[in-house]
Every structure is written in C-alpha cells, then in structure tokens.
Length: 88
Image 1 (tube, rainbow, N blue to C red):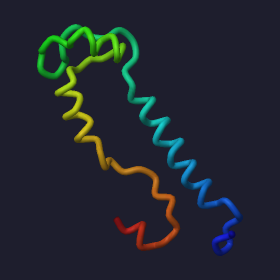
Image 2 (image 1 turned 60 degrees about the vertical axis):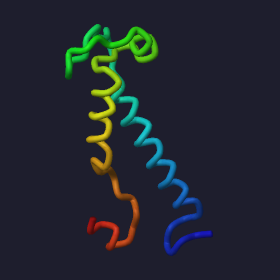
Image 3 (image 1 turned 180 degrees about the vertical axis):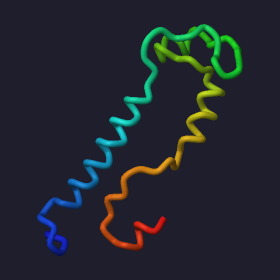
C-alpha cells in the first residue's frame, strides 16, 4: 500500500536503510590492528579471554562499557517525513 506519494515499499526501504547505516557505523567502530595488553583508559590488564574474543581491543570491558554508554543517542539520520519529528 502506497503512503501518499511514496511508492509501494518505501517505508520498508527506509527501515532497511536505517538498519544498514547502523550496521555500517557499528562495523566502522570495531577496533582493528594489534590489541593492547593493558587498558588505555585505566591501565588495568585486559584479560586474555577479551583479547581473544575481540582482537584489537584497547580497553577493558568496564571502560568500554562506559564509552559505549556515552555514545548512545549520538543522533543519526532522521528519515521520518513529518515536520514534528524534525524538531527533536
């Protein structure tokens, strides 16, 4: 069912684009290269299990959790068409 002047499937296309953008952003944030033995933020040793599970890790789990918490809600692309959704 078309929504106004939008073609059939336009809403699903917007959802797919939002998901693809989020996946691309998450992949871009993954660490690359050699990891660290000690956390860059607090200096504690990074457990071997974390280094194996997350090659390239530069922070311990606690410090990374804090960094992740701060980055939530950092914005993004608003693909909704209503003017009210553009105000926030």
